[in-house]
Amino acid sequence: MKTDRGVGIYVHIPFCKRKCDYCDFVSFAGKEDLFSAYFSALGSEISQKKDKFGALTVDSVFFGGGTPSLPESSCLTGILDVLREKFNFSKNPEITTEVNPDSGSFEKLKAYKEAGFNRISIGLQSANDEELKTLSRVHDFKKFTVCYENALRAGFTDINVDLMSAIPGQTLKSYEKTLKTVAELNPSHISAYSLILEEGTPFFERFKDGKGLPDEDTDREMYALTRAFLKDYGFERYEISNYAKPGFECKHNIGYWERKPYLGLGLAAASLMNETRYQKHGDLRRYIDGDFSEDTEKLDRTSQMEEFMFLGLRLIKGVSVERFKELFGKSIQEEYGDVLKKLNKEGLLLFDDRVYLTEKGLDVANYCMSEFIK
Ligand code: SF4
Picture 1: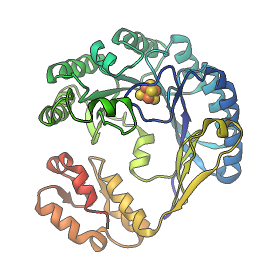
Picture 2: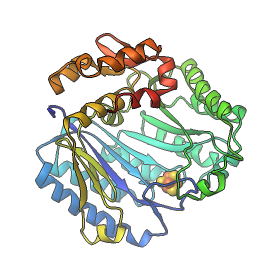
Picture 3: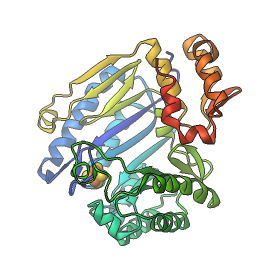
Picture 4: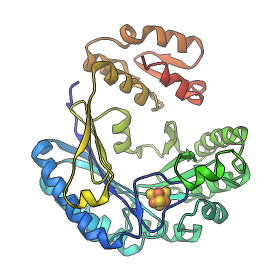
């Protein structure tokens, strides 16, 4: 597969003030004493990766976690400086950091802006304090509004707000109120995901029998409401769970869905480079001691094509027929003719110069995508 375009860089910051009961991300609470050692190890990993991948052009950088806004701003801005020094950046790279409402002070946000961050993503989840308590988030809605104001004052114009549906105790009415409150703030981007019960979390144990969770019908209604509601406020749905004002789609995440190569730095980060998937270990102590080893999996041609289809079909515009041919030397029809016909007949998929899911197809996207896996 040709890699004729730039890469995205993901930087993982595995620290949080407190661990949320539903979260299965690699992140640790109460490790403030390890911040400086972690960032210094991250610097070493970047130098190592530069030797391997330094010739690439970076189109986007995304700091995620964990809570990237928890450590001092100089930790993040320092890493961004190191990245700039070691890699070539394209002319207008998108540079995002996630921000927790609890730690998004004006000083921090201003420092990010001055260092070159041009997009922030605030994890609100819900505008209802009871629901935030249920999620055991450290912030309340008031803290979010202060953080949002701080972001505007610091000069950010590209702001994502993360929302969550299907929270225990959440009703259609309270979810609609959250949507309305956030849409009226007029951010450039909204991500809206359903809560997923992840095995091994306290939430899983508490709710695995389904009691206390919104039922399936309410869950579907919330999903449909998000679409209709945000449309009225001028947000365009460009991916199953992502909505943006025109021109504010997240380039970094589009890169994942279009299978652009990306380099993951930091603990437990994953990469896709030269058609190989890399997955770093999640042992904080080993990482700090300079062990950046990762599992690798070289993707064969069939896996590359499957990924191209099931990731690309998450995008509302779907996948490009021409791009498929360019990458794999054969047409989509030739490879997936039967699946395309079947899904088209079921009213789930359309194709012209692109292959994309219909509204009905997007509602059962997992089924459609699974059809492309041999
Ligand atoms: S703040 Fe985010 S990353 Fe940290 S524990 Fe909560 S959900 Fe997980």
